[in-house]
Amino acid sequence: MATAKKTETTSWWERLTERCYATSTATLARNVKQQAGASYDALINDLERPLEPHFERELARQLATDQPAHFSPASTLMPVMMQRFGLQVKSLEESGLANHADYVALRDTCNACAVVGDCWKAMRAHAELEECRHLCPNANAFDALAAR
Image (spheres, rainbow, N blue to C red):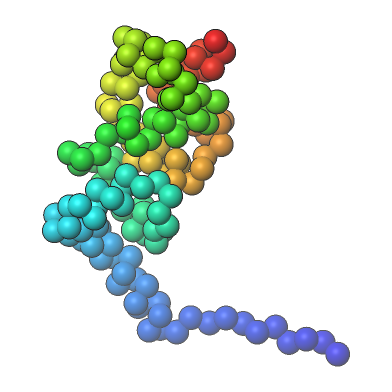
């Protein structure tokens, strides 16, 4: 006896609701940033917090265009990126490299990164090393540090 396939259909109301939400996501993220700054800061600095995909995409877009005052890519993203390269900030601190001019330059490069929104999304998605190499302007330096 053949099993009948159940076809999933989305009602017009569900499609309309989804479209309205997707369209209003930019406004929602902007309002959270302006009216609930502490919550916004917590959202962008917590790379493990689950977010709805439209909202996550909008936060990444906002980070790419206008970095908030309470967000430092070098503090939030760089330690996670370094882990992808097999580096630990703690071991660099213990070896004295964390205060070295080269490390400071890495932090400065990270804080001025042109693809911070993409990096934020990649670190949230636990990007693999190869993706990180293509994305990060510090990739060659991280590879060199890892080779030491």
